[in-house]
Amino acid sequence: MRLDDRHPDVDDTLDTVRRGLAAKPKKLPSRLFYDERGSALFEAICEQPEYYLTRTEIAIMRDHAGDIADTLGPDVRLVEYGSGSGIKTRMLLEHLHTPVAYVPVEISRTALMESVAELASRFPDVPMQPVCADFTQPLRLPVAARSPRRTVIYFPGSTIGNFETKEAIKILRQMRAEMSDGGGVIVGVDLKKDPAEIEAAYNDAAGVTRDFTLNMLVRLNREVGTDFEVDAFRHRARYNALAGRIETALVSTKRQDVHVGQDTYAFREDEAMHVEYSCKYSLEDFAQMAAKAGLSVAKVWTDKDERFSVQYLVR
Ligand code: AVJ
Image 1 (tube, rainbow, N blue to C red):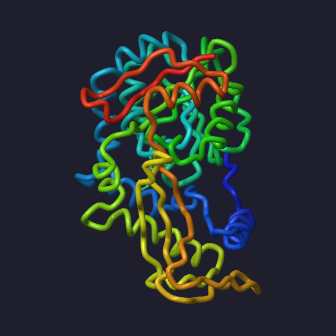
Image 2: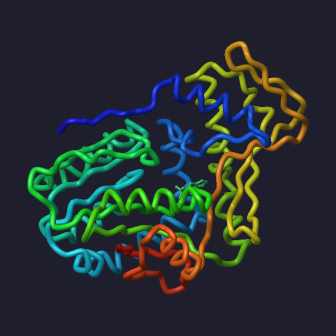
């Protein structure tokens, strides 16, 4: 198995950080969470009692993976954006009929190699073509050994929720182009519900989400030489009901300067630096957004409480 490595380099990250700190208000993209420790902390978040998303999506897959696989039909090339631990993928691959290839696209090299190694040993007959890359950039899919009947993009975990509407539409459009005629998208979408329940999921009592958020600064200090005083920032995640999303920020607990190379960026006391959106949708909201990307919802699977949905989108 060969790794197609297009991991962004230190200069890319440095550029992103400079631009984010110069922006008003300051903001850093949530993909910067996922270094090795960040990916491990995210797995730990999934185990927290308050974080209902992963558990619910897995339950949907447990109940419906067979139906999902039947809907997709035989000879599918499965392309996964932001492949995490691979549990849900495993459930899908177990039911797919004669899949042509599995192409995980993931920005964290370690997370990618660990999950693909596990899947390769479990599914020795499925060719694995891992790509280490930022899936928001145009992809160039590797050539499949046997031509697929359809290319299906698997985008689980409500990762789509991390993007603002405009960006989400852009990503859906890009998927639409990459899957080509006859293809489809299987996307995990978190649904609107009691705001207290949503907010609790991003403020777990054990503080794992706080550690996950703060780890972005630890990571940047190590990788690009910033000097964030990690203890002088706090995690803040609030549900904005009007926008239908969790907004996560790192809030400076004092007036302080942060340096990037020769440049200085000043933080006021209580200044918030935005780091993540986690958008929540109604089924109607999501169908409308998909339509703007030229995709229609062909099928929806949910849990009985309609906490979470897995949706099949086609051209
Ligand atoms: C992996 C993007 C789905 O937004 O719920 C979890 C990441 N952030 N807790 C989400 C996350 C804080 C997560 N996604």
